[in-house]
Length: 229
Ligand SMILES: [Zn+2]
Image (tube, rainbow, N blue to C red):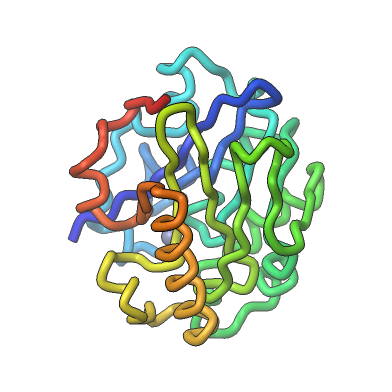
């Protein structure tokens, strides 16, 4: 299985919002040096330099300093690796995430990299309780979807012509929507509730449910840097 490690950029009148930041850009040149303790996971990594988050922003005509808000689905290494580029942005994290990230269960410990997470102590960090309509107009709604991690968030994006529900890691493959947990999930029962919630919400909203790590969800999309309006 080839697992995409995405980030999503959303232009809104009140800000430029990044949902997740993928891997550390340095890993494009030196994956094992950047993640020495995760070397076995990095062995098959395909990370061309044009896929670095800074290069992809540049290709779209933006610089990291243009990003006003970074929403983190959770604090695992494959979602926070590029966050250090956005020190001027406001960060939005589920409120139970950071205490757990700094003292995780042993089974999830390898996914939280303390050395990278320390960065969040120096930024404008908002810990979000429950759901949050980010700009008050319904366009971007952060959804509290715990299970994979305690503070996991998904993002409902209501565009002009369609709605997209970015599930992040509620599940890792579509099969998970039937309630099949991932071995590294923090809480299996919560994961099942969140999987049910995103399915029901996507139906109600007639939104496209987009599973971040499921390669089949990418085959149906405009390839990066594809845009949606
Ligand atoms: Zn992930």
